[in-house]
Structure formats: C-alpha cells, structure tokens
Image 1 (cartoon, helix red, strand yellow):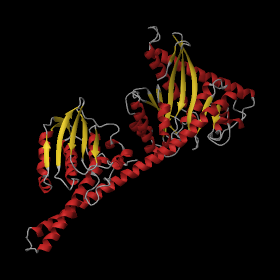
Image 2 (image 1 turned 90 degrees about the vertical axis):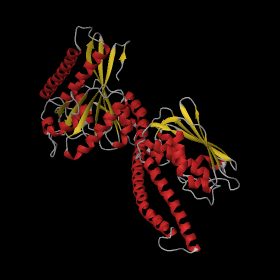
Image 3 (image 1 turned 30 degrees about the vertical axis):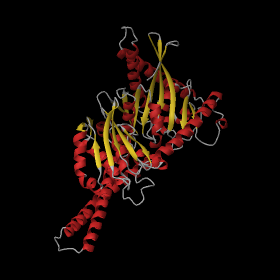
Image 4 (image 1 turned 45 degrees about the vertical axis):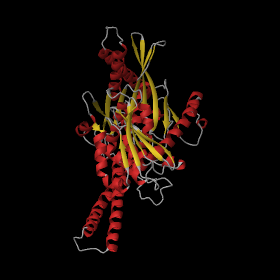
Length: 559
C-alpha cells in the first residue's frame, strides 16, 4: 500500500491503471497528466515495450493539498497489457491503493478483457488487497461494434460500489472524470487509514474537497489554453511515434490538450538499440532514468518470452496427459477381453488342452496380467499427474489396510514363498485409496525384486515422529545400486540390476506423488545385494503441499 513520510509530512498513494494491451490505459494517464501538469511541472516517465504503444508504467505524482498538515500525493502507474508481461503486471500492481480497470469496449475483445480482470483480481487477492477501491473505465466508445454499457456492466461491475465511466481516451472524454472519482476514493481511504482530520472533517468531506481541487485545476488549465489560443502563441510540435494525430476538435482549440502538446510532457524511454543520449529532449536526470530502467525492461521482456514459452509447454503437457488418459482407458477393454478368453481356454470350457497348449495359455495369461499392471499404473499415474484424483483425508486403520492388501496379494505371496511381518500399526489421517495404492506398490516391489537365493522377508512398521507418521517397508531383496538412486522416482525408471525382471517403472513414481499429495515425502536406504527400506512420511494433519506434483504442471512433466 502507499506509505506515509512523517518527516516530510507526506502521504503517498498508488493508483494503478490496469487492462488489456492497447486498451487506452497509457493514453488515459497521459491525458490526466496533460491537464494536471500543463507546463510539465512533473514529468511523466514512459517506458515503452516493443509491442504497439503499450507502456510498462507511467509515474505521475500529484499533490492534492493538505489534511492536518499532511500533503497527499497520488502516484499513477499503468501496467503492460500483453499476456507475456503478467509477472511485471503483478509487480506494478503490488501495493496499489486503488485501480482503474480500463475496458476496451469492442465486442471482439470481451474475452481478453475478462481474462485481464480475472488476472487482476487474482493478483490483488494474492496480496490481500482484493477490497481496495476499483473504478471501471469503458474506453473506445467512439468505435463501431462496441458492447453497450448495460452489457459491460454485467461483466465488469462485479461488486457493490464499483462505478463505471464511458470514455474516449484519444479525445479526452470521460478520462478525467474517471481519475477524479478514483482519486477521491484513494484520499478517503487514506484519511480513514491514518486517522487524519481529527474529527473536524470526515474522510468523505476530505475526499470531496480533493475532487473539487482537481476540477478547479482542470478549469484553470482550460482557461489558460483559451487565452493561449486567443493570443495565437506558437504551439509545440514535438511528436512521438505512439501518439495519434490531433482530431479536428483538438485543432480547433477544444477543452483537451492536443497530442502534440501532450507529447512534450513525456520523457520516453524506448526499448531499442539507440542510447538515451540520442534524444536531446531527455535531460540529464531523464537520461540517468533511461539508463537505469533499460536493463530492467530488457530483463522483463526476456522473462516474458520465457514465461510465454512455459505456458505453451504446460498446455502441451496437459494435452499429452489427456491423450494418455484416454488411450490407457481404452486399452482396458481389449486386455480384459483377451484375459477372459485365455481364462476360458485354461478352464477347459472349450475343450481339453494338451500340455503344450496349456503352457502357451499360461504364458499368455502371464503376459496379459503384466499388461494389466502396466495399464493400471499408467492410468493411476496419469490421473495423479493431471489433478484428476481428489484425495479424501479420513481416519485410516493401517493394520486393517495391510490385511486387505495382503489378502489381495495372497497368490503372489504364496508363489514367492514370502513372509510378511506386520508390526502394530496406528490409525492415521489419509486417503484410503491412495495409501492402499502406495503400500501395494511397495509390497509388490519387495516381492518382485526378491533375491533369487533366499525367500523374501518383508517387514512393515510405522514410527511416530512427532508431527508425522513414518511408514517403513523393509525387504531383503536385491537392493538398489548407488548410481541409480537419484533417478529412481522418475517415470519408467528402474534399477540397473533389474534386467530380466518384469516391471513398469511407474510404481515408485506413483508412491512419490501419493506421499506428496498428502504433504509428505518418500525416501529410502538400500544396500545392493542385501535389501531396501522405503520410508513414507505422512503428516498427522495432511495437506496438498504447494510443491506437490498434484498441483504443479512443471513437476508433472519432470521439467
């Protein structure tokens, strides 16, 4: 928010113009500057981006008089409207005391306007400033095919107290009225915030006085312009590239400053290969400012390019995940049909099988079961990655859960002649389906990667570590080579000593995402040839962590 300088007895407030690119934000603020600073008492700093005439920000300090000895100054800013500058928009919006949201009234830009409004509200909400005053300006009302004010109101007057003003920024119509209203709201909020007036004047009265002063300044400028026009003094003819030519009304001496006059009030800082010293219009301070912001703007531009590429990459990753989900889901049907057919043959429903035929059917069933495991793991991994699974945190009795898992795996346990030792386990808070999936994968790995020279022994325990539960699954299998540890939780990665052992390479990746989905983690200790112990840590009060792959596309893609 704006700050107060006790030593200088000055209250500074920040007013930000927000909206789509080339929507009229900068033109509006320049018009205000032309009225309030007709002799360029305070220069308007403009930092041009490379696209059209959208500017990064404009700095416009305006003194609105004193309250209880404190001067009130409003600093005006605009933000870049292009989507690639969203991080810079967030930076400029930070600390705003009020916002003028400039809407491009053209029907074709409605969706862009709505997206810009959504981004503004999200940024304000992130800063805890979503209740600051917001004024809407419906710009470009002179163009064809614009939405009616009633239609625009339905979209942009989104809460009580939001006022809207029609405008034509290039002509100066409605711009100053919007600024005056927003300034009054800022002054009222500041007076109330700092308790000024000492009971003599209410915040609303102080705000009305500020509005009146602004209107008087505007009238004074108009009178001076009329006098200048009568005396036929020469007018400045300096122009910059991003201004339009003066209209007939401006040329005839209307109430608003012409573009030529407005251009003389701006210190432009262009993002180009030319140095600031090439322009004689920029004084020493302006050149220093140009030098200081030039590198920052270049960095912002490059960051914007990278951010735009990241957004495109996220979209592609999302599309790939959706395609994978649909494909994997469709694979279930033919695999189930094949398993049913092979089971029918094995049971002799279609006639007695010779020994060689029975062996072939058994091999086919084994391959089908492996395919089912792969498809199931692919589907679960894809669902977790794509936020398709909403975890439901409820009390889960780990003893009962392990019993259910062991009963479902009884044939695999018997086949490997394995011993499962389950110590006393607590009831924890978590998602039953997710914990079942995670522990099934860990037990399945313990059986699958058993040492060929000894029967598998798997120990399951759970330790109380204060704020977390540490679920331990320890086996006496082949272990994990040191060189493979860093990549073991990635998709389709397995230890280099698993050659000849079937597996999908997705089990540990799923375990990691399930643990992260609870706000926890998974680690392991292993000695090659002796065994491995996996530790799944689950918070006693689980949450979806901000860094969890369940909520991060970048992590989903392993980028």
